[in-house]
Image 1 (tube, rainbow, N blue to C red):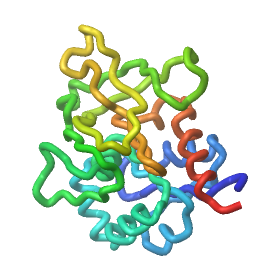
Image 2 (cartoon, rainbow, N blue to C red; image 1 turned 180 degrees about the vertical axis):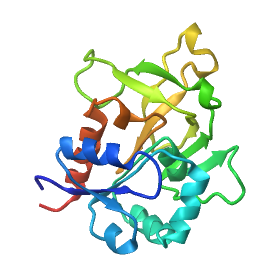
Image 3 (tube, helix red, strand yellow; image 1 turned 90 degrees about the vertical axis):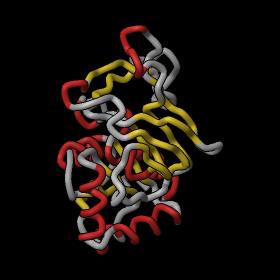
Image 4 (tube, rainbow, N blue to C red; image 1 turned 135 degrees about the vertical axis):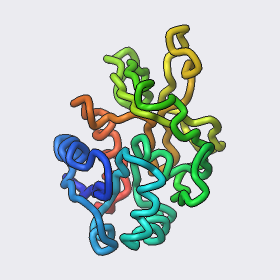
Length: 210
């Protein structure tokens, strides 16, 4: 399929930025707020925001169970920051009323990098974006999670560089993939670099029948 239809969960977060990046990466991008809109897409992006609020909104808009079912059935999904938290099997430091989509066999620590004042940027080596040695991916972290543990079927795509300047974040996992589900702890929609979105659009194309 030349231009797969990729939705962006439009309940909170950087919806416009993701729509623009997906369009540039070769998809037909649509906002998703209702189950009928979810049924029309070949893949879905879960943007950043506040994960507990987003999980409540998923219930309010009657999207939680339909989305769980579609992800379990193989819908390609990409979560950035809060989207990574929602896709995780388990969340540390989450709230009791937080709901999970369970698309990734990972344990994520919510707000692992600290409060808003501790947000930061870093260049990452990211597996799958091109030939080894190409330009590193510049990543923007905003009250970001990190992945504490991964299951056997999860591929680690990126870690924070293991340098003294990184402090407690050194070597922490910040991008993963499991089958048709992709997640990053950072916000690739904010940098103008379309490579992560192109990777996801390619994953969607691979799942859509010719």
